[in-house]
Length: 405
Figure 1 (cartoon, rainbow, N blue to C red):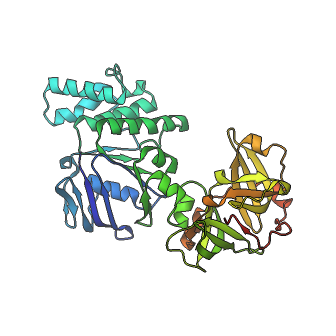
Figure 2: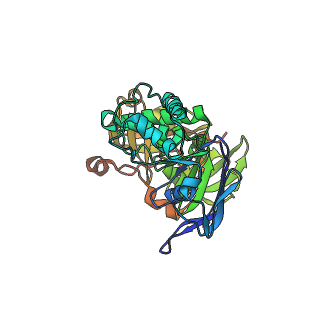
């Protein structure tokens, strides 16, 4: 196992700068995912780690050895790094055994040692008994595991994954996420994984590094990124979040909550979590995850002082098996709730309701104009939109502080 230290790394292609002073440490045995949209710099960072790209500033150290700095790059074959690509890159005319053994033969291992090592790694990836099969006789998941076994065979200090599951179908991708995590934990090799799929990163990783524009936006566990996004970009990219524009009204009032006034005609006050660094009067976006919202009729809303209730109108209801997506108009805003099918029975598009959620599910993030292109709120069908007027606040709710203890 090897610790990775990335210190102020710059990658400049001349026409654009892919990495803008990236600094990151990956501990021994840690599984870290680099997550972000296309062009964010994650693949450039992985290729720099692998020695496939020179860097124009900073340094990359693995273990005690500096592998890259400006004007100096240790070639890939001397880095003790295993790289698993999007394509399996298996020799089609070689058996599973020979595909895995090939690299060991180049390293001049003797035949008995190669045979023992191939058997060992096949056991790790769960492919015992398939040594004599050709790649064409394997499933996509089996071929991916052969590629992993080939990289594990020489006992690299670091494993690098370049979107290895992108060629698999959805069901197999889901299975292989757990398999890759199991394999990495069983061998304990330090791993860096590149993906644009946030669900994949959340399942596999000990820690996620979210990137955008050649910089690190946020890093932490899956739960930290999902529940406490650092920015509007993070809230939009990691999962889906309803984002309501508002201003901080009071910060850290009694009961450990703050209040925020919505930027809407109703100017409604909403209680939410306290976030350090948010000042009174600051412009924010209130992040509320769709699974936190429940749909109630106006007459069913109780006076629980920890509950936020926003008058809304249903635009559309979409059945998705285990959940229903409910698309709402909340004043001048659009929102989405995810509820159990049984919770939405009897409701229909056009109906006036309340979007109800706990104040603890409200998390403020600073406004970020650059995050606008990630707004992926699915539109309701045109017919539903045409028949749904903007919901107005129910009588007596225009200036009520909702969700404040």
